[in-house]
Length: 449
Ligand code: 4AD
Ligand code: MG
Image (cartoon, rainbow, N blue to C red; front, side):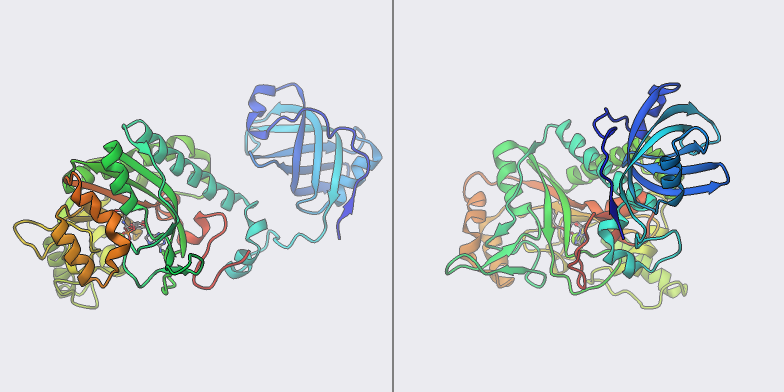
């Protein structure tokens, strides 16, 4: 049960954030947050306070705080909301380097039955409690890394001459095949879908701006329940006019190197919490090795012959998770596999002029078993070819007329890619499952909270 406090005298005092304590050593500050944990023995109590920017330990002595504050501090449960007034003391033994000598405290709400306790909980339970789980140290660290990944990709494109031009979420046409479409019943006489990718619109904005990118939520009605698939995820997608497959590969390796560098520099504390082996991130430096699909297949077949892979991979198929892991285990950097068979790729892919069965597409496979983090390539430029592909993929041509216009009016070679923010974040964090890399994951069996 939670009880309300009625007196609110220090609530109006200016707040100092825990992340800023270094600027206030020796000074009296007011911290506003939630109780993370408390230990007490005899005449001394150690309440740990978190405020979203960090966690700090307070030291409260029975004979220096009021009797009410002393009683409250000793009995408060985890996640009680409280405000603490105290003096900042540098202490190198303390986790963040500082401690607070508590002078006074104000409890806003006393809590005694917080569902997430320091004991081990199962993931399904924690996922049901996601709205609260976000407060835990590890989850907090993962989402701070996510923020830095997003910031880094935006900075990268903003500083590289790209214009942000976001794509719509409600769309009349499929971009990535019809098997993972979410249908929306709203527009009269017309089918609408939640977007699978902003790419088709990026092709229009790239023709308008030269270099454009979009960044937004995308949706896949994936029937697969894996550690790499969400039904709703965020994708950053750059697109460049007058560009080829090779330009896209250089862009992808430059962007990923930048992201890894930013995460290493800005999220060192969080990487420590996550026990991330940072040497793995330090090796994400362009250039990345490039591997033709044919050579990747040969590698898989040799792997099978040597007994390292269960099934023999046949030329022409798409890679599964074990195949990707096997290929990337041979390199200590991300690897770019290019020239996939067109049959396993989307309808818009340009073809290799020398071998028309191959698409000018690339997948970037992350090391450590993280698999595909980026997919992209060069787009087909010919109106006739695309009309034929729309027909072969049984897509409704009316819905693609605007897209075909891009080949009627000033068609040029162009190329781009998409990177899933959650897959990238999971890799940066070194965590097992991408469900922890988005505040509120949506998956095949999860729509709540
Ligand atoms: O390879 P995909 O399907 O490529 C496209 O959508 C292109 N139209 C992008 C483009 O060229 N503009 O998806 C791109 C990336 C994948 O490499 C992966 O990182 C992520 O999006 N992704 C997913 N992430 C989480 N859950 C899913 N179900 C995902 N499907 C793709
Ligand atoms: Mg892909």
